[in-house]
Length: 244
Image 1 (cartoon, helix red, strand yellow):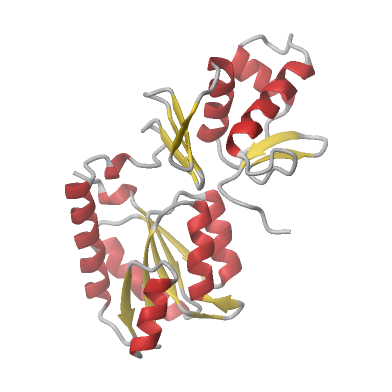
Image 2 (cartoon, one colour):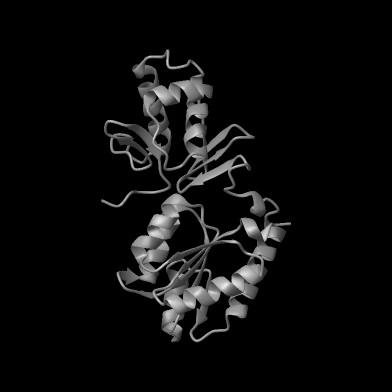
């Protein structure tokens, strides 16, 4: 059974009173990993850093539309997105689902209903996919990064639904990045941690393996959006395209 305290929930709303109310109700329901965002930019930053399972998303935000934000969040994973909005017409609801929403609640709403819908969704996912409670957890061995997934236990790299062959050392390097998303590693650190050579390797070895990873996971290996070079520091893996 899913441990509710492990579920990452983002509440994206520009009204602090609504965010606070939802946090209180969800905490009482057993959820602990609650993250607040008051703008589209803050929500995207959360998605880039955290594997979100549930997103409670307002449509009208100060810096953009929650409808457009919904599709952008899909670049970072596949969270369950529940719209919370005062826009209650049939057309608005249809637009919400068309843009990738999974559920829709109009304001004003009972926060206990929100908690109940989330719990119902989790129960449904447990029935359909028994591994749901393990997805995207650091100890699960399954790491999802938008267009690709790495399974440590199976030793598999899947890109856009297709299995991609990956030499052992290339896979180990990619796996290391997957376990530490957003963290910058120098070439020396990578050689130490992945090859275990205590910094005795040459830079070209790491560079060649970085290139081989990019050839597998990037749309355009020459213009990487996932495995990035941080000038003067090293490399880092992100969950989706970075903001300019």
